[in-house]
Structure formats: structure tokens, C-alpha cells
Length: 374
Image 1 (cartoon, one colour):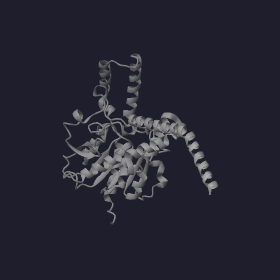
Image 2 (cartoon, one colour):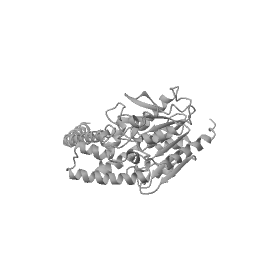
Image 3 (cartoon, rainbow, N blue to C red):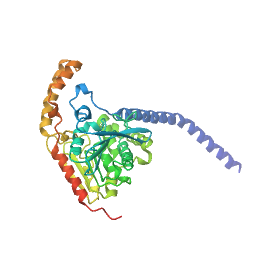
Image 4 (cartoon, rainbow, N blue to C red):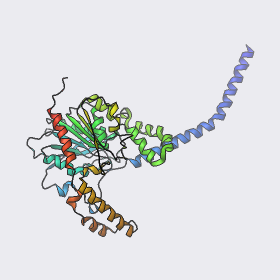
């Protein structure tokens, strides 16, 4: 008995000695993990800062006021998404018998008015349009845009609002979104809303996958691999049970008509790696359609304008770069303003009507389909 007792004491002493040796190493490891997690949080907050618009003095981009405020009505509304109040805008109230309600989700770093030319095209075609500024964007509250899942959560709240507004609630709902919003209009199909169809432009399929691609583009593949667990951890702290909310599951769950559009030259939401378009084999929804944009302007954003506008903008960019070089990268404000105004604003804002007609034709076909039996 004594022998066993002393043997146990020796084992305990050995374990204590081993723990003493490991404690400093464990402390160092904890410090490293904590530092990397803190650095990830810092960089993510930087990456997902507030979105807005360029200074009006230095931009030829049309805005609702003054470019459309005289010819088109607009009504402002607000709703909550998490702890923030978001501002939304109803266009096309002059359409007494609207074709439907088009709910629009914009891309990250901007607000809905970055697409005002396209939205007014739909209003002119007889649609009622409900567009809003997402969390941390333009006129809405939020210190930043939070992350790539946020757009779907905001769209869910926007749709919930639309279902209570007397001007919107009885209209058939069609979704349209670009990039951040292109993901949102498909991922929101995981929620229970009555929707006729959705059109996604330049959307990513899985937020974590897209975030890791962005990390890779910033610090390389090796760095992205090291930080992958911390990026996933950050997303979980922000989105919890919605961290895995993705476009593929939304499309498949809904069975709705969904039009997925992507540019063949898109390297931002990389068409071959992270786009919804690249996940076609995983999408089982028989009503899903896929359209590949081709041509020299089939990238992430240029396709919203027609070729003539894009050609014109190339000359603008060339001359702008030359002027910036002449002044060491800082053009005097008065000169910069005159330079921008020297360009044809109508030409700069010319839209790709072929693309919009393609989307509207898709909506028309979806409207003609019978409602599935419940």
C-alpha cells in the first residue's frame, strides 16, 4: 500500500513539474492567439467601414436630387435592422397600377443612389421601387457595414417592413441586387417572405469564402490560410446563427425563379471561385436561370452602363490621371470641379438598357407562372 501511495505522489509531482514547464509556452500561445484575433477584428472593421457617395463637386454621377427630384416622386420611410435605423425610399408612387414591387439591395461601399439611373428606369416602366440604404451606408445608421452577411439581414428587415406598409404590402414582390446585394437577394430566400422572383448581379455565394478571398488578395494565400480561423471567428461573433447564411441554400430552398447574372471578367467577386454563378452544379432549383455577360465591359460593375458611356469614361479616366500626375496626385479643388463639369453628364450616366430589359423580361415570365401549391 505504501509503495502505491509513494508512486502516486511521484506521478503527481511529475505532472506538476510538467505543467510548470508548459505554462510559459501556454501563455505565449494565448498571447499570440489574442493578438491575432484583435488584429483580425481591427482589419475587418477597417474593411467594412461606412459606405457613401463621392463628393458631388468631383463626380458626374447622377443623384435623385437634383437630377430626378422634379420628374419623379420619392417617399422616405425607416425601419430597424438590429440596433440601427435604416432609411428606405419608395419610388414610382405615380404609377397607379404598378407592375409589381421591385425591392433593391445595393452593393457595399455605396448607397442605393449609386444605381439611381437604373432604378428610375424601372419606375418609368411602371414599377413601384423600394430601395434602402443598408447598415452603415449613406443615409442609414451604423458605424460600418459589419460584414458580408449583413446585407441579407437588412433585406430581411426591409421585406418585413414592406409587408406592413399599405403602399407596398399588396403588390407582388420582385428582388434585384448587385454584389453585396446580389448575395442578399438569394440568401434572403432562406427566410419566409412571399416573393415572385429574384435577379442577382455579381453576387457571391458564401460570405466566408468571399471574405477569405479578399484576405488572400490583401496578404497572399499563406497569410489568408493563417488568418482563416480568426476571420471565421470574427464572423461568428458578429452574425451568430446566421454566419453560414448563403445564397445556394436560399435558392434551393425557395424553388423560385432566380436569375443569376455575372460578368465573365469579374475578378472582384471572382466568377470562377466565389460567385453564385460558379456554384451552378450545387443549385437544384429547376426555376433558376444563369446568364453570363460577355464583352470588354463584362466585369464587376461597368456593365450597368452602355458601351458608349464606358468608352467615354475611359477618356475621362485617362485625362483625370494625367491631371492628377501634373499636380502630384492632389488636384486643386476648383480645377478638379471644372474638369469634372467639362464632361457630358448625360453620356456618363447612359445605362445598359439591354441588361435591364433582360431582367424585366425574366420578371414578366415569372409573373406568368402559376403559384406553387402549398
